[in-house]
Length: 172
Image 1 (cartoon, rainbow, N blue to C red):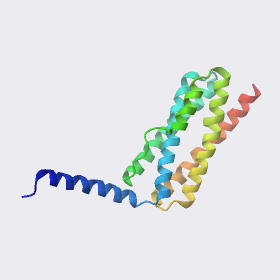
Image 2 (cartoon, one colour):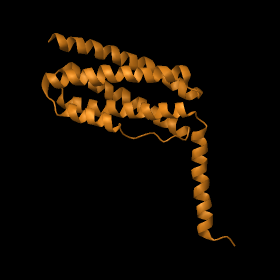
Image 3 (tube, rainbow, N blue to C red):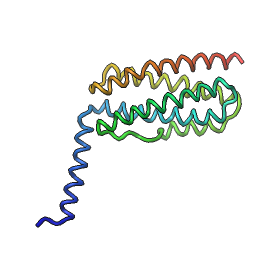
Image 4 (tube, one colour):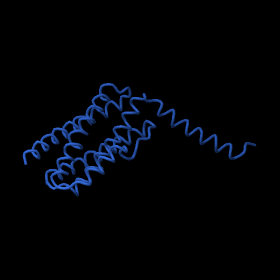
């Protein structure tokens, strides 16, 4: 008779191996894309929540609300896609992204508005668009590629809106 602890150990190993095999079905670059996209998404939502309370201009608050709504929806889709591929994505922003949000949250008024729009609206979206453009063109997994391609127009719209908002803030 096989001891119970042995059987449990074998089952745990089989489950862990099964998850590893599922994730191994994706190229490392596809896994890296999913993980980086998740972190970028969390950074957008977290900084935009700060902007909801700290922004002094109504148009900045409206932009932040849109970022929360759109990035929450995209994040949910990304998490579901990653789970279906056996990939565990981060459930928070990177340490560097959190630090930027912390610095941002210490600001007030026009200074906050300009910094939020510049860093999280323009700069972060430019970086994320590069990430998604590359994945839309080069991802090996068809569903990962489709997700990147489907999400890209929304990110580009966010960037355009942020650039317009940035220009308007500079004129004030």
